[in-house]
Image 1 (tube, rainbow, N blue to C red):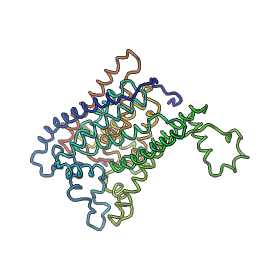
Image 2 (cartoon, rainbow, N blue to C red):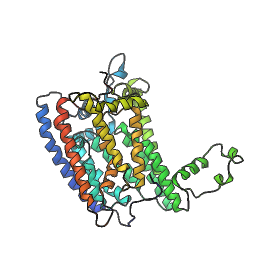
Image 3 (tube, rainbow, N blue to C red):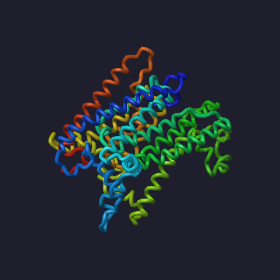
Image 4 (cartoon, one colour):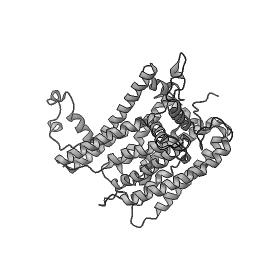
Length: 454
């Protein structure tokens, strides 16, 4: 992967605020229409089911947020509370929005989630257009619409839950880390400080929306080095990205004076290194959010590291963290068994979801910053073994949505393949949504199947 050149064409233009706003409004209407359309099969499937309290969806997470608003967080009674499901597994940000809208606006909890998700999608589209403009993508407001048609399991986005909200907060992260660097002046440094502070706050909120935000820490560290390298190049730095990483490490070694007599003097020569702080402080905000929620749940439950123990013990994992052999066995189940085995399709579904994030990463059409971040995002997910729910995580991640927006956008002046790419993405979204709602939901899939012993 060539990270030395920005391959996106550079065109000076004003941010497309008007176009982004129009696309956001149209997208909200489309989102509401599709959500209403999906109520028909959901109602038909779950008619008369008393456990479906969050119309129009059967979605388990949506019911949990209603319970949080109604009863608050709970600690299961028993001698082993860390192996019984607690509502503390569902993060508070979406629940706060839902409870607040219901109580302050008089909106029923049944519909508050749908209202919040619709507004969140509009916010995502608006910031998505501005983010693509930062990346010098042609017609950015239009191509931000790619977030409405994720290729695997798009229907999840249109069901009440935290997916749309997580997408919106994540898009705020992407917007902040793709903004052009301010000038190296007193005013520019103040502006950079404000941006970095906002990044930390948004990162904190991202973690409190969904714990999947932890998977963005490594990509944000990469973004810190990449953006800092590009900024240093503008100041006269002449080396490549990996040489820049080495220079930064050498610059901050605590035992640097001891190495002066042992290494080449050229390694310690002054270099025009400039930093872009927003990505790394956003990552710090995510870490701080995790520490806060870990401390809060531990204090409320009286169990040390309660939230972490819940995540490790309650949720099904396809393999133990770091077990590469079981990872291969899990995905190898795609090719074993007969067509009647439900566990055979879960690995295929989860593999397709993860691969969908790598397609933009493999395309030279996508700016190097995004191509570098996308594969790193999957590291924690695959390492941890928490592969169940990959479809929901991938489609609600703003980084992936930005990648697809860059992928479908035209580059040449007369390029017509953009329409074909739009068509492919739309077709995949429709087909996989039909498979999810029409074929998988009726038989209780997708479940947290792991490695099945036969």
